[in-house]
Image (cartoon, rainbow, N blue to C red; front, top):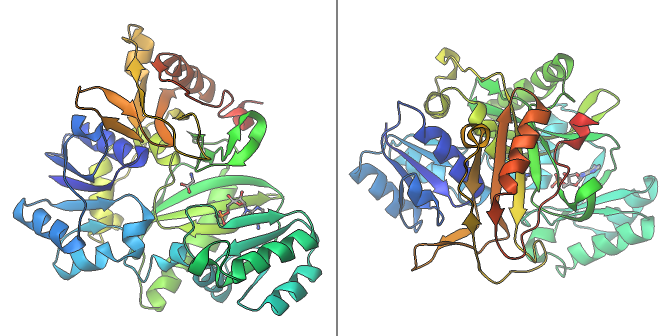
Length: 422
Ligand code: AMP
Ligand code: GLY
């Protein structure tokens, strides 16, 4: 089976790497891909969805997998489905679960799915009133897509009111902030749980924990994620069962009932508060860097994606390797504040068998220069992933590999997976 992957990050590279090792997979294409995905397949321009669908038809590509949220929210799946092409991801209507926080919160409320107490509003007066009823910290969220920046945890009522005002005036996030959600702060530990869905059936993948802050000990600014590990021992069977019964089943039933069956990845941002999983948010795609650790644990990724895209998950036999994976992100010098000067990436010859066979790199913000060398040109440049029989072993391998990768200004955390090891 030939496959097209839409996207250009480490997430899409890791899908490509897993599919490259899958004996059922033939040619791989990436649109647009990055400076390293051409090691795994062929990069093609992203362009218009119709033009991309022409390319898929002309080349008999049997499956398209969409990595990031933007093309999903913009309706790539609708265009492909109208042409009868197999595509893994939600339609634009179903992608509102990520595209609009208000849609998501109201959906959770309609279907009695546990989430933080909230209001949605475009009125400053209502915002102020509700803020007064909460004990700080207070969470203020812009409705639309803000590249992960639209969530403010305000430490006082005054700060929450100020932020709500900035958003509603359009100053902070433009149109994306013209409506807002205000909600109670949940105090617990955070998980990333992914369910692969085909509209009616689902498979829950081993749960991950991301590390969103730039610096060790969860200090410094929020980022897209500086590292993750899978599976996390912070989830037990009880939590999986609650997620299945209280969250995934009602979500799939609700989306069907409302005429927009959900196909693709349901990414549950979960806060566990005193043993109870509560939904912080939904995304409609894999997390990045969580995907980079999940992919090496899948035994037959092409089957999982193909069966989900074609509505046949019930007959799929999805198995996972009984291993752990730890991924450490290497970011460029000025991440997450601003762009950095391109820096040549030098990777030592990996002579240690243990590392060569149990660790690998997922490339993200990289470009291939005219000289054929790889340059760090993005914020998050690559992820060093170690796989092992324990989290400690996977972590050691990931960090051994980190030590062999060099570029000017590289930054990485030294404590990924600490919550599982302490
Ligand atoms: P979101 O984009 O909604 O996931 O929010 C980004 C991050 O803000 C989350 O990953 C959490 O760390 C934090 N966050 C969001 N909502 C809440 C909440 N109600 N209580 C505590 N932390 C939150
Ligand atoms: N790593 C979290 C995300 O992709 O949103």
